[in-house]
Image (cartoon, rainbow, N blue to C red; front, side):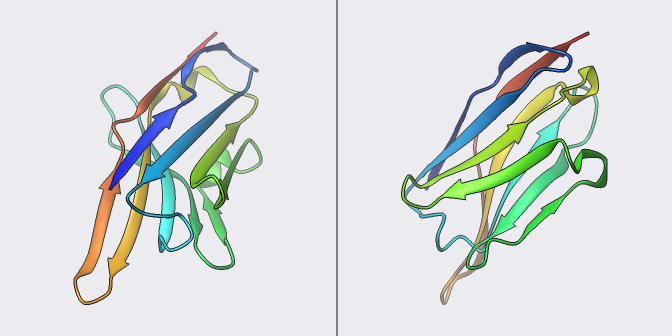
Length: 121
């Protein structure tokens, strides 16, 4: 299983970016919960947003509601994070995560290597 993030970069405050997470070896349609996390310098990794399989229920960090949108395209086997009205405090490495309960094997967390988002003031 491999998760590869892309779309990070340098953006001015108030701008937008869309991150992508392409999966191989597993499909988003069966992943129990897929999520974006971020880790800012000197801080712990935190949940940004998550989306479930099936109905595609979403959940966001309270501080990000209204600015970030998580989605997935099962046909492209890709998950996205649309980030609008970016702020300097959104600067972080953004990671893609897939939580999957393998039948008969139990749960496994898969992680991408991350993509850096830098928001300048």
